[in-house]
Length: 420
Ligand SMILES: Cc1cc2nc3c(=O)[nH]c(=O)nc-3n(C[C@H](O)[C@H](O)[C@H](O)COP(=O)(O)OP(=O)(O)OC[C@H]3O[C@@H](n4cnc5c(N)ncnc54)[C@H](O)[C@@H]3O)c2cc1C
Image 1 (tube, protein in one colour):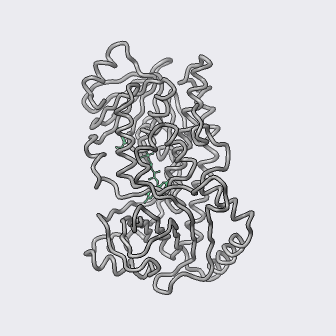
Image 2 (cartoon, protein in one colour):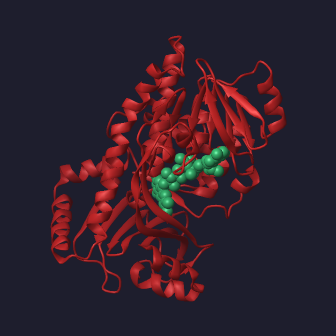
Image 3 (spheres, helix red, strand yellow):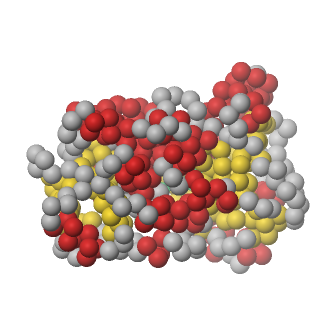
């Protein structure tokens, strides 16, 4: 339902939802669906109109979804809506490259054949994933959607949390979850500070059409200004995430298409034959931002609102979906035991489960980016030797493949493909 008036009428009467979610990007809808499945009523608010979020040209990203994330999407009923647009990721090749001189002979190669579970993951374009989430929420009677309204204030007492929207209306629920992205107002209004820094890098993002098939292989080239990822999409297309220093990125993005491609071509190489742009170009400034706490009074943070990281290893959304799985499981089990799902005791279980894990992942992506976005010859030799060692040790290689598939660590049930 995308009807603020109906939602307001419902909320003004006795139908107080169990959970209010601020942010209908990607993690918000995933959480709404996971919670609705276990019988919770959810109201989800997003500042953008539904038709803007459903517009195919809204966001040029494509996500490398780990196998565990795919399992969550399957379990909450979203996967069948995107499966036809998903490209299995069968191999990952990581190379220490240098624009113009081609990749170095040192590289790591990870093959899904080293694990029994299947592909390491799937590439799914934002436009398909976002639409699938919105359609799945429309079909769920436990979910009320309010689109095109911004949350401007929040308050809580011993039993409830109250949100004020930009039209002056208010909503009341038992728990507030902030899925409102890297600049989370939910966190700020709760007085939660953030740690992090700007990378001085911007990601240039676009889709490329190429002559030769990619065979489901994802490539990551490490260049001194930042990494270049070439990620397989359906058909003879790949998604490019090309990180450059911000001033250079701005200059490159402003160039006409032919000049843009002339800069991309030597970085890309010719292993996929001739390449051309397939769609619009996008830019995303890159920063690291971690909330100093993932919970507050009757409030929890999920996804980028809790931890925004460098896209170098394609882990941001995967980490968010782990939060979704963990929070849905903690709340559902607590509810079944008759506990108050908004109580600090319950919310602390979620924070304990996810905080260390995400902070270490965010720091690992940070170190990785600093180590590889660097032209120091000593560092280059060191990392090439390191890659050679990882590539030549089967047990280590297998460990990396399991990590890329998201199969390691304390996995919430939904990420194991099991209902809560
Ligand atoms: C270039 C790039 C490539 C990436 N590639 C990958 C990848 O391959 N794999 C991967 O796992 N991750 C990847 N990521 C990370 C991924 O994009 C993010 O982790 C993910 O989009 C975060 O989703 P979210 O729902 O938490 O936040 P967002 O998508 O930022 O959604 C937040 C929502 O909250 C709404 N909102 C904010 N404030 C308010 C308010 N006050 N009231 C109402 N609504 C509000 C906004 O309108 C928005 O819709 C990549 C990131 C970048 C930049």
